[in-house]
Length: 138
Image 1 (tube, rainbow, N blue to C red):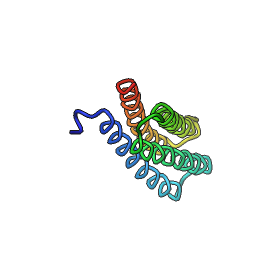
Image 2: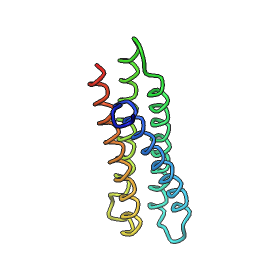
Image 3: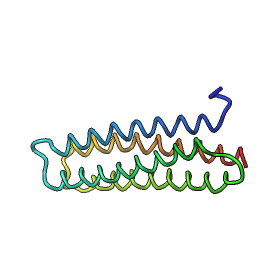
Image 4: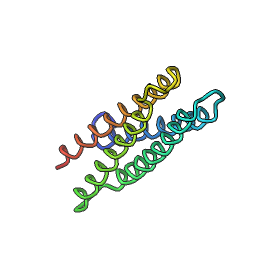
C-alpha cells in the first residue's frame, strides 16, 4: 500500500527524519559534555541542540498534521506542513553553519557536520515528497 500512496510515503519520510533528528540531538547533548572541547565548540553544540529541538518540534507537528489531512482544509494544512518542514531544514542549516569557523576542532566539526548533512538530506527528501503529494492531491 505504501508504494502507491504519496501521503504514506511522505508520512514515512517525515518519521524517518524525526527519528534521525532525535538520535542526532541525543548524540549532540553527549558530545557537548565531552572533555577537551573548546568553549566555542561547546557553545556551537548547545546552539545546535536548540536548533535540533526546533527541528524535532516542527517535524512532530508535520507528522501530526499529515495524519489529519482531509477535506476543505487540505490546502491550509499542507501549507502548514510545507512551512514546518522548510523551517526544520533552515534550523539544520543554521546548526551546520555554527561549525563553519576556523576555530573549530577538525574531528568535532567533521562529525557534527556529517550528522547534520544527513538530517538535512532526509528533511529535503521529506519536503520533496510532501510537495509531490500536495501537487498530486491538488
